[in-house]
Length: 155
Image 1 (cartoon, rainbow, N blue to C red):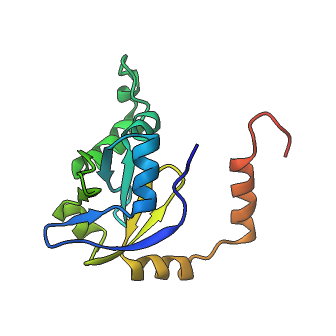
Image 2 (image 1 turned 180 degrees about the vertical axis):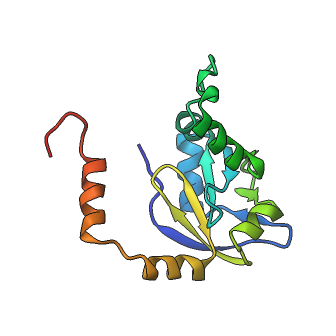
């Protein structure tokens, strides 16, 4: 399976559209299709989820029983308030609505970062500041190793 890895600079046009970098677009279209969800989880960046990834992540269930969970309802309200379902157009573009651009402080120049199964679109200065102000620690690496360890195998 191909994954989304690396980062590329990109520009938002005057209407808020961004052309997904070609390497990312190829992986998304070949692996998942053209449908994506554009949202923000914490207002610091805009996330672009291929629709099948979004369905798995949110526990989309025909029974809809998960929607009764208070934390999941709060999460869904957060991501759906300004988020939306789109399709990559013929040029590989998506629209980032004004509310999302404002929350993530997205100027014309942005950084598109591959996050394995989705993309994050950042204000480049905010991304660099966050990485400098909150560098990974040994404790972080230990936690990451535990999270990435295969289930059922000893650490």
